[in-house]
View 1 (cartoon, rainbow, N blue to C red):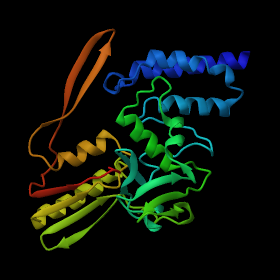
View 2 (view 1 turned 90 degrees about the horizontal axis):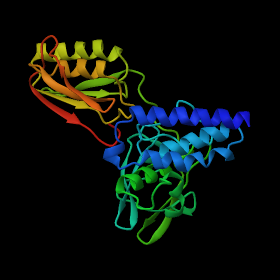
View 3 (view 1 turned 60 degrees about the vertical axis):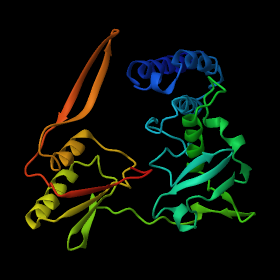
View 4 (view 1 turned 30 degrees about the horizontal axis):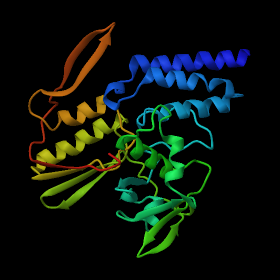
Length: 299
């Protein structure tokens, strides 16, 4: 009984934290009060801490938002998206297709490619495996809910190797991406080189949360300004872990010549809305020549 009380208190705290701080309930059409009622009835099934972690993982699926995850996981836990995924899956009418493949990933190495039709995951039909990620509060699933469930499924769990079956020219073909070794990510915060005499290329290596990037980025921008390099390609296609606003504002500050709106903040203070716009400020000398941004599903 004491353990059940502890789990109930922990759930109440978790649920309340989301209620006070989560930004997208209205935008996503989530009835958080209804979800509380549903999940409270399931607390009695919890026998130990592992059960409780699984319980909270199930709760986060209600938000169908890859930005939301726990700071703890089990070997049986799902990989998070997009940072733990190598495929982007989408539904087209009543079928499922690969929309994109992460470069240099295990999936890419076995030959999985965009536009391949998918019919099975781990030797089972896809549709019947999606419920574990879909909301318990509705049967009217939005496209965002379905998209989240699909991509969580194909990201896989930490302890199970995936098999992915496609339909190619009327024939089934199965791929085993986790038997491969992905190309190791670069240990540097970015890589860069000149594509030609007029174009520089900088690829950010999933380091937008590393403050060391600021100093290194400044050095490259300074050198490009001295050379008056006509064009810069900034590749953000491998930044799925996100980052922090210090790095973001520092980088943007080298690419603008005047103060510009950066993001709008809004806070509900006892039913009274506070709202303000944060500006990003130019830093040092700006690179003002042509800038080309590369983005994708792992940006």
